[in-house]
Length: 304
Image (tube, rainbow, N blue to C red; front, side):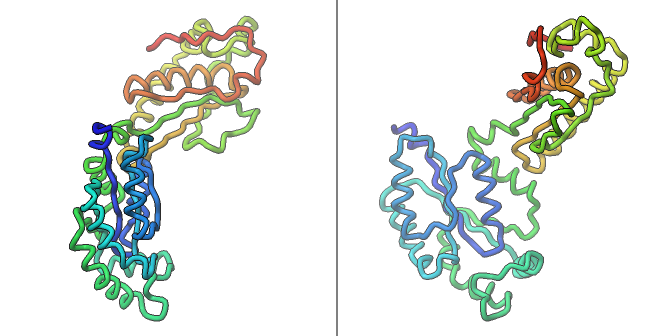
């Protein structure tokens, strides 16, 4: 139990409205944190104590609390003092930005500032800064998001709050499908491989899948296939790195042929292996393989 307590993290996110608290929380959630938005300060101590003593996997927790709580927010300094008295590990992250940046963000989103219901946005921001001055002084970490890009924030958070969950990296899924069964709606990228040699027209291979070595060899013999795979690997390596750089946590690639039995299955297996060798765990799936009259299916395609 002591070892688990050593890994416990309870992050309290607060700060200026429009400074990016929701975005910050969502990134923590992607990193494996259990997150609660707009938690009244009067409940923070009880909730933190419950998580701290829990034997479940809620060892990384984050809550957002701010002036949306109205008069309830006044209890935050007292809650922070109580956490210290009880010895519950916690850290307070205060997000802020310049007045100009906050005004611009509210103008762009056309949302109303919580304190500017009967006044200009600028006046609401000024009033909020005064209210939050005491909380800001108690913060363990102050982040100015005025000029911070999403990729900058993601890199900073990985270093500061990452741990084991962040080390898992982006979740990559590659799956095959047949166009005649419909284009998938849950893919980030769809690749059509119907230009590759089609084993369906070879009587022996008609009901064999693209995972059978003979079928794979038939498709691989074409120079077009070899050129395509090389370009595909280069393109995917580049794309994965770019998506990782901007903080994308999931990447789903769909490979399609006519029936989802030969060419798409072959390419999915090859691409899946390439990405696994480079990035570790990759999910490889075949959406429509079961829809076909399969007589021979062996999942043993050799690597390049």
